[in-house]
Image (tube, rainbow, N blue to C red; front, side, top):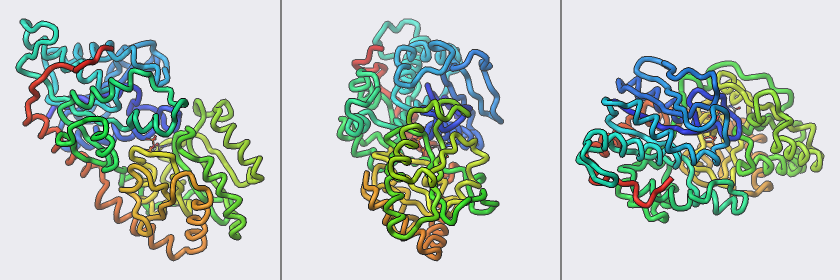
Length: 428
Ligand code: UDP
């Protein structure tokens, strides 16, 4: 199959841990790689966000990344990228030329717009007689993975949500116009239904974990204290890292004093940690609570450095306000480390309560401390949960398995040849 991926802000080649570089980058990179290994030819289209990027990067056999000129060639926050989606679509359709792909797969709502638009342009080219809005016979099937939904973001972030207002109507329109949607967890299917999207065209395929990289075999990074609690991710308030800092005094009251909370991620740019407002907020909070000596913010860590850090942890804590999927708990499980997870979104599917970790209610520092106290005080339980996590990661979440499920969604979309061309109601 010839597959085009569209990932407007999240390049598979980007460094991870910045505000807009996390799970989507990992997902697009690993899924594309796994599909290419299965024999498909995959091109990932992303926006050129630096002047010196080559037009095409050959990543491996049958896998390349194409940087499309769309907007200024510098980093632009993802919530300001909407005006450039027309150019992105045009660049993609131009690159396809006379050899369009069998499917185009959009990642995040704005890439969905660009994917639909590019597919429409290619169909018109295929039928020169077709006027604007005409339904030509052929169209490239469009598959959409949202990664995150505006409805959920608004519910949790309210006025803090910096998404463009158009997301309110364009995101559901992408959902209605795409031929097939891939939800990454069961919770997302309910959200899609509430958005008015026909769940008959929704397939579920989770995110995966790189089992070659993340495993319990290998040396752990050194840890300076008896216990290490680990938090990994983009440092944005909704990830709830402050809740883990707030749990530390409760943990001390429960008798666990020699504890380090290691926070990986953050930093506006690698090496410029204190320029990051969220880093400053978290450190101030730690000072206020008298736990600054226990908190280390490490900044962005490249992929290769992550497994050793996971292995050095007694527990990984993931307590976001909400979580569309969450790859970090899978990485922890694959490395044999139990996870304390807020019972939200995809974390309810990945982390088995009392199996591979412990669930806690959202936004509850005392519950986080209680769960951590159970794990830190019980090495046998940690080992048991760690082993169960490894087994679960291996059997359910290999990227090869995720790619096979994604492939099925592509085949369904190709079999149900789309009837309509239009991106209803959408104007960029
Ligand atoms: N990550 C990383 N280095 C960092 C911070 C994060 O490699 O400094 C990776 C992390 O290991 C995971 C991804 O970024 O693979 C974050 O994905 P997740 O789905 O947990 O969160 P999202 O970014 O999608 O909100």
